Image (cartoon, rainbow, N blue to C red; front, top):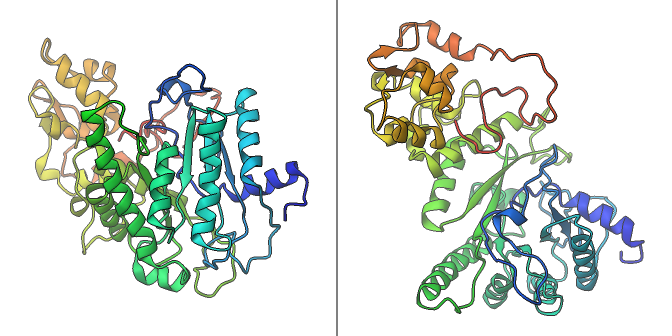
Length: 428
């Protein structure tokens, strides 16, 4: 494998890494220091995403796309006939340093297929991070993948060098993992996540006692779930996500629409990847993390899947019209967050602004409220802004009407068919 030219291997390994979307570079804050190269302050890491989900501010690469496992959904599975390549830890270090010095990247996202054994593979990943930190004095961002089944001592060592670590659950249930990834039992994924969670808590407590205490993965841990490869409902996925945030304190759960690429009879024959479903799950995830929603409020046994027509907050509001409209000048902040069209920042602005003035429709627009949705659920100074009966049959029709956009040329539009959704903030 390693006889191919470096440029060709880089192309193969970067392409093989693109399906792992859990590569956010946020959450760490290591400032520059004398004798070191780079930093991870918020201004040092940009977030630039390509259409297929690659974060191009990082060198996102696999150490190798060879793998001893045969996970049915994975492009790099053992039985898939694709070009294989590998790099040595030294080659990855040299690439990272050369790319950084040329201002191509701000950090490294390193994953891999599993070769020989979980422990051997984890040792190779750690060798990259250790050399970057200890030899090259690289102070920039490093995200390391954890290998399922690796020794706990190696997991602990990885967190000493990485800003963020992640291990992908991939499938929401034990049954689906056993069916599609028989070489990767659920415990081999969950146990390292539990260990990392405990080590993060210990490191945080130690840092409160001494600022010289060693850091452990200061940007936390994340994971990824594949959407659509197995029959689990959105409720199953969101309930699992909620548990991961609460019990294991994950920074992020990422969702990746299943891309059909195999004739395996265990996999569904989807005409196209479920990208809209992936998008709705990200919106629901945002509600769990920042808007005070619980999984059981968004979905239940009677409605196990998200409505593809509406964002999850609008869908919840339409099912709870008895709670609306609310008076924007008086209602609590927590209730404001549940109004469609009011995001976290606009809710904060409303609370601040209404201390000094009475808010009306004009003021709400200036504060960033998306009145196209919010007006049906608000009164301002006692005046209802919706213009139609809140419980009338035309409400859904009005909310589904496409937004009127001025004719113009935009440099970049990530969600052109999804109006009034912030691609940067996720506010709803």
